[in-house]
Image (cartoon, rainbow, N blue to C red; front, side, top):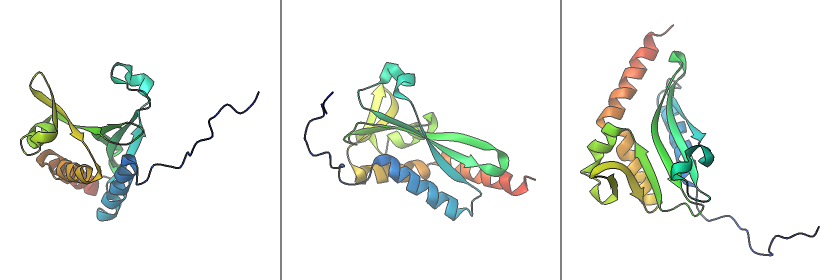
Length: 153
């Protein structure tokens, strides 16, 4: 059988994929805490989330990890199309509630309750991630996990 793929330019999309930014942030946290904390990305199979699946969509969960405690917790879920934007970021319920007033223009609500944020570009993504990482609940979690890691065997 002959090659059936079209003779088109398949040059990668310019810029960085949003998941790359999460990997970079994971490295920053590990460096900042001397490896006490780190993060990892888990790819979510779109077939496992079929109720909300769009064609060609990428879905990632971003986890905080405390290796000494054998503890990990999801901080957010990011979902984006092949063209990267617009994308959605879903944080924990309390972080979303805390940030929804300040970032109201980005809020996607279900029945009036904020559930996730719609991000249009890489600049807005950086603002959103900084807000999530600096949210009251996130900072409390980081402090608690660091303290417990320091006393773990």
